[in-house]
Image: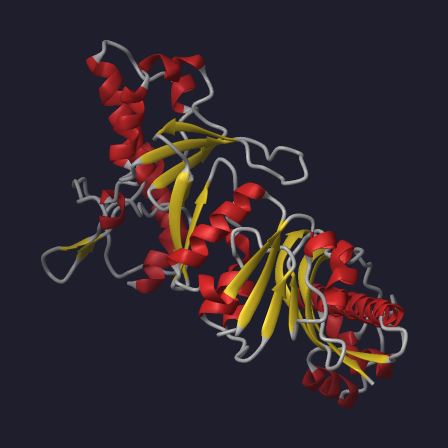
Length: 428
């Protein structure tokens, strides 16, 4: 049965949209794609090597598979809009259908669309069409997202389709965040780093969050890491307003002070056991303030965010067999090749790489190794620069910096990675 099914699937003859069923005499009826008069010949050809003892083509209507019974939210929305227009004596044209979104973001009770409902047609219905869509998608508010405004705050360009305001509430790892989507962005892509921060043990520590925003990292430090006190620096008035609400929502406002304004002027000094520098593409503008914020008598840890670019590398195989052997991912294969007396190929490739798949795997492993090497180089550069800054600020002391960990948060593009360096900084 299984080989037969695989043969039909391999030849695109099996209809996965319908269910098979049992028949008399222990036989099974399998659904096939209708190929017209050539169907029998195509089935016979596909089963050339796996011919069952007895088979025949019958014409029978089989039930639709369970997965095809599932109606997606997008399908529900199209169906609802189509019915709405039909009641008004109109048709849902292909042009209008193409303007209906297939995916969206959910922020609490608000759904945010992007690049859709662009035509003037949708505006003529007022709130009526938006109420319909909100009911289908089980939300109270609808918004349309555009490009981020290129200002110093990177304000989102969001227009409300339904709802009085853009304030929403989002729960992430047990922390309640509220913010206005028309004025602030919620960085959902940093979830792994927020979870990592939440796992820190910061009891009896004072933390400075140099770029606090609405509290992406400030709140995990307070709620989960149990920091004794957090100084949150933020210069965007809308983000600061949301942060103030979030501190109150999570009942931690007594353990946090918001330093509103440019952190170059308002960041506290000689106070922190730990400083978070959560700014990308580079947090370098805040390095000097972060160093000044550390306790001069004992130092502390800096969590330095940056987008790090690693150039694309061209992998070349080493002509020396023994050197290639030490680089190979699978040492057993290398040893067996050596025992068999194999030598490098004429084109200089390692014997293990003669197989195309293994050749590709070797290339991927080499590229990963080169990327991590670049990360270590970046870490060493940052470590040196931070030490020099600390010694310039504190002229009477020498400092030692030590890389504790490099965290890969996410990749933005090929060869561009968001990293966080945990750097231990101590006076000698």
